[in-house]
Image (cartoon, rainbow, N blue to C red; front, side, top):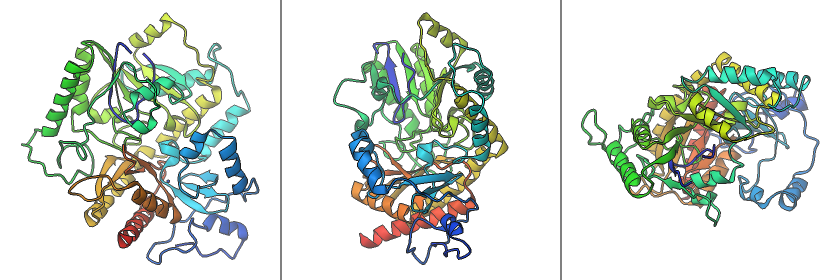
Length: 485
């Protein structure tokens, strides 16, 4: 069974296998920090929140030359995934801020795809990396070295029993078999790569056939009417019924594993009906399967209420996959499982040259310390809840904002043609709003099966002032689009 992650849907694996500031006249360098990402701001926007960091002046390769190389020497997929018609040429970052090569400043609300957990170049994490780099860059786990073992013990202490055995990797994305887990066609190649994988119906209480205004564990519920009796959830019952149908018709009587994100990431921050995962885990285990929680985006305090997303569902998985925020952007991943499951890996030899790299372990250990010391999980809860409740007011104001959902700083805003149909807003419209937000100095992401959901997943160091600035920008961008429409 491959140790791989799913970012889009729930999968059964069968055994068959992110006010222009006044120019600071005191110094040119001072101005570099204060410039926002747009030259002629709308008069009704507040000033971009201040920043006391001084970025270096960019003296490197021209933008034109970078694009030539990007087109000629980088894999064509690099151009395909490049955000914005006029790309952002990133030069430097600090905490929740990014600067481009022209010295423009951006509020980063996407964190390198939900990856920068505690802040760009966080001083504590940077110091840990520098310290380790002076001591030992690389060795492999065929030798015994302190940073590996110190980190494995610390990471395991953040997970409930019996999840105590750690296997360190670089990530899960490089593995070809990962593509078999996704239900998003854009990520699939025209060849068979999902043998043994079956996608279940996504239990989406906004877009799916069933759902109402009391279904999910979120500060903001859908606007769909809910007629369920107290203590009951019709959407839960229906989606579990569909899952049972899948077990009966589409997979063997025994299954290997069930993969699921506690809240979907690239899939558009989709949340399931309450108790859906709890019931699902029970059904999977009855059929001999292990339950795997993909915490690549939801882990490390991002959901606010809990350190791990699965804890919000009152379940304990058999395996947990994690990456992204684990190293604040440093390439690293991990699989944590039970001693019993881990023992089965010794039947063969699986070796990862860079898994458990000393620098990676030192950085990841510092990230765990920083999350606690900086109160990052509480920031996620407070600022995230504020953002969602304020975004819900914008949803009630604009016909094209269909849904606002999430927990902590794992937020999705689904855009629609109209609330009645819930049909996805056209890609051209999404792109126009997306570009406008960037032009006003904020970087966010996109996701969902149709690319119709704006993803807000910033470093867990943003402030209420940052949130208010984004809310003003988002409101202006939607207003601009609606005026044109």
